[in-house]
Image (cartoon, rainbow, N blue to C red; front, top):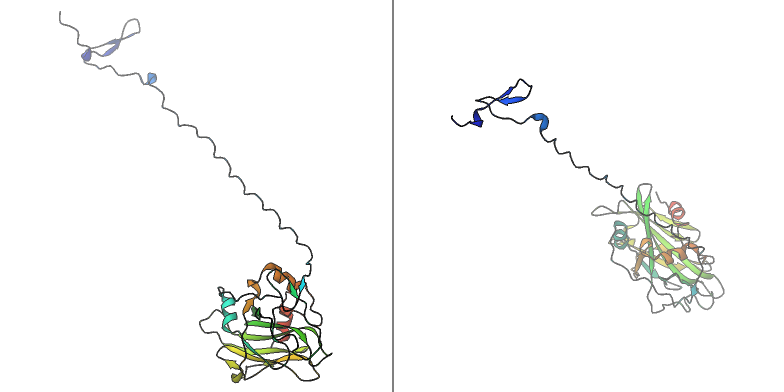
Length: 283
């Protein structure tokens, strides 16, 4: 008898209901007996991001405590390199001041917020205030007003005394240069105003002989018995280191916003800056 070749057998039901192999068939696996597909792995849920901590509120520094030092002890801010559009315009149009009578400009505040105590209006008009050796200062602040860029330049003087016994401790004077736009290649001066007692002398346009390139020329003087004020001039003056409002330390700004300079007031403080620009409007 030949040996049985299993590869040629097929499945056939037997009398008992069981499956038997027939020749010529191959054995295939029962699909019901195959392994089930491997399920997709279950991933852990992505945790929610941890919220950033809420920054602590800036503590209220409280009211400013005035710290006064001698008028000849206040050190000015060195003029920093301009970075912003406003700072570059401030330097470009920095005015020059000619001192005809009275004190030369002094710094009013230092980087720690110490302010000048000024001088009594005694002696002659320039007595005790011809310079401290620390250098001088001019303060600048600019903004838009009715489509024009205004730059206020302010000088501080320890006293305003046209003659002995007259005048008052402290003096602030300022000039405002109005330009078309600080953010163009060649901004132009449109007009100028200078402080004069309780008001302004306004020039629209500025006379050409009072402009040296892009620098307004102003004169600090008095007409006896009146106190000092500013006016434009054709004569050259001197420059001081410029410090813009946003370049000063926070303590210096707080001091200038808070300290009362007697009969004078800080023209570029937060409370005075915009109202004075509006009052000086020359158009």
